[in-house]
Image 1 (cartoon, one colour):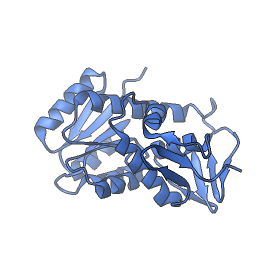
Image 2: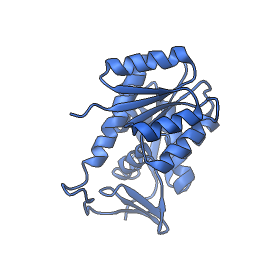
Image 3: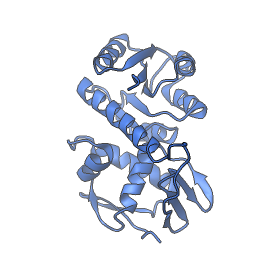
Image 4: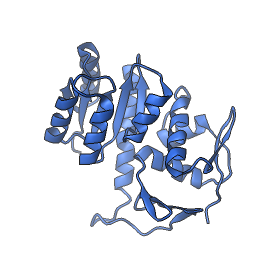
Length: 234
């Protein structure tokens, strides 16, 4: 199996070295960058399979880095932030990040999330046939929202809507159980593959991103429990 390559973008050298050391111990090839311009340059040169990206960077910030690299080629991005600010997190998801960790974080959790993101990409690639063409499975319709699970595309009112791999998987998971309330902990286990419930705010942030992109009435919040898809697939 090809060794996966990860780009670590972090200007705090101690953190960068610790992250790189853990990922190398996990079997990844690691490239590093310490500022925004260098990150984009290294991304284009190295073509990594995943990017671990700090929000606060010299040159230009991680949000701008994420915009530029996602414009070049879709790639899973795990953002690191020193602030647990929901606005920042939603902006990060909006520009193409798939997940985030708030500092301080454990290297064990970071490694686990990297593995989960890469497994999600592998599952997405597995929906294509041997020639690389997408399949032709049934389209899920939610009012004027159409989801093609095989092509991993979403349209609203005939216009394609860009979702990150995580947002897409969450939407399909909810669509498979319309009007069924799914607890945050269950969603973490079944969509993210996390056994622990410590990251429930991750679920909340991704639901808010889906509502912003597809409409606030699509997903219902059941306070203290979780979420349910409000529109029954047609």
